Image 1 (cartoon, rainbow, N blue to C red):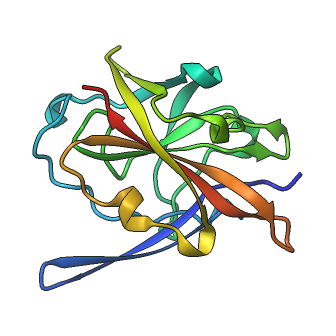
Image 2 (tube, helix red, strand yellow; image 1 turned 90 degrees about the vertical axis):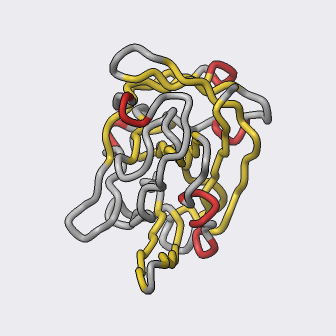
Length: 199
């Protein structure tokens, strides 16, 4: 089975104080992941931004998902790290954006399947609007999010601004692979789940 990973490439171009973002999304090789936009400026949050701890655990009760969260940074070439295939049942939090509960988008990436079999987000396509997603941080504080939408997109038309763009409230995005396979055996789509902090 091919190794599906999340591919979300975004470039930052700053000119006259404006940031332009271009992206490509898909699931091919571990080196082909996103260069996200800058972390949005905090205005308000359920967890004050200066008090937020790193996320440690993800739970999606309706899907039976329970996963520790590893930290995902950038590779030397500016692409985002993804969980290694041998840890397919573990999701990862991208450290370049908000922590869950802070103002702005928090992004959690997980495999659908790997060469070792089904992975943590294998059933993510079954998630329903209104479903609860809980993220516990390293201090034991849990932030709950409510699913508002899900979207399957071609890796050639990934909605970078919608996923990574600044928000004035805490939001969560879950990203995995979806769809059929190209001639090289790589999934051609991404599945994105959008969630808002539960008030």
